[in-house]
Image (cartoon, rainbow, N blue to C red):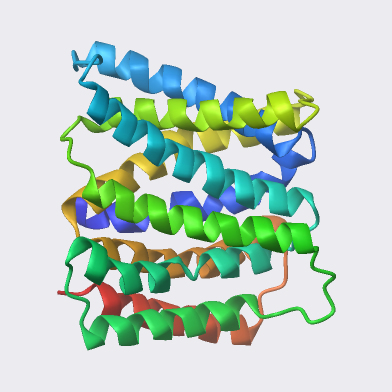
Length: 282
């Protein structure tokens, strides 16, 4: 079962891109994320109680997990949602965030003392090349500067979160750690709402379906798998699977949203898959 965790993660995480647009069409990005992670925090709390996990741990462990949540659920997801709400093309945002494995590989050596081999670097660069082919650069797109800045912030945040999560000193159960991370995300978004945003959510049927998908399949499912993979594998190898996200998202959009998927996209998907295999194999 553990061997297919990366595949399950890729499918669940990629599907989130399909439901992001319906969410921000019916709410501001920060209200949506505050609502989402409030439910997620409650869910992990109840699960921790049910499985008799210790909730009140020492302050250091709480702060570590809380800060990880601020980086991942706050700055990363907040940056992506905000950039798309400001007109940033989803494909371009996904491509920029896909630079994460390259940054993580560059930093995991000096920070985590992980050995990143030439083979891994070759796989990462091949994967990035394939991601570019799949997504392409729409030269005619009017990319908003604020959207670009937000996406770059999201890229830095998810890279920092991955490395931070690998360096955590605690051995908290995943449900407890995920609860505190969700609380970190909620706190971040509530602060944004209080000082910078006029909050609103239209609880339409579309919003409820899309939000339910992101809560149960992405936050409870994919994120838990990601934390497990980071904990049990090297950071550089774990994040290499992110190169499959843009290609898989494009394929899902073709299947479910009837978006165009060219032969060049299929070639890029194949190149990306080969790159990830090279970068992650032992």
